[in-house]
Image (cartoon, rainbow, N blue to C red; front, top):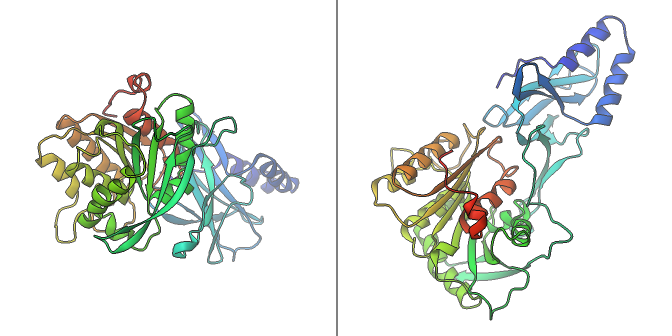
Length: 412
């Protein structure tokens, strides 16, 4: 990422002002207000990248705004440059054209959205655990992938979602569990395929999983299935539970599945079931799959923390070694990861380059003979892209025969 690249629009404005054209400044703001921010400008001779310039309006040198983003491959707060004699502050990055990413501005100790950009991404509050959400602005490059299945369609029938609470004896606590049944669900039909999502509240509120399930079912890309969304990304025990915690594995595979099977007609065929997780949850689903291929035949990992290691272990990438050193299992994988996930801050010990770790995991799985669908997106470690890649994984692993025939396993 070249942060010193100059924006042609800013350079043109500076030249016009230096030549005495004071109207150029008001014209710059008028055009930017109409067109929206950030500025996206082509690079001559480069079809893959553009110059993206973030702009903040404030008079005076003392403002010192900054861009908060992960565009350099890690979370950064990059100071903006002041165009002398104006109220223009700017910062330019060289960005892939297919990027979709969030950003904010740091102003006076607070993080705020871009007033010139109507596109926002919202983390909602979770009142039950006291989590306060936030909003970020959205950068979409000129070739950002279309959001084909993650947006609600008025004409598509919606499945039903219900919140339950399950008491785990092994963990001595209650868990929120949301159960999705597809349109037309009948206990007399089936048995139904199913998917279990870790960080379930997150997948519902932020990753738009039920919209994807509704749309994929309507498009006949997947058969109607039951989805179980477990717990929340903001639950106080999440970091413990998802770090390959054996008692939580027991809750999932014994207590939870027994509860769900007693109430919904689910298949016994592991090839029609999937376990889904992102980040630390992506690590956990790979861990559970290692021990229970007879329950879950499909493992869907989104930006998984494959570089994780137990605190007592000296070497990163513990789960990768488990798959490397054991005989192959009847599992199929879908993995995605962002090209900007190269230096992710984590609360758990392990390698923070999620991109390198995912590529390593992919290579190990392929060498062991596992079917692997692997996808890289242009973004960082946040949910901007997971709603778009989740449907790809559901199609690849649980799709109808016709849909799966079009998405064969691939190493890259």
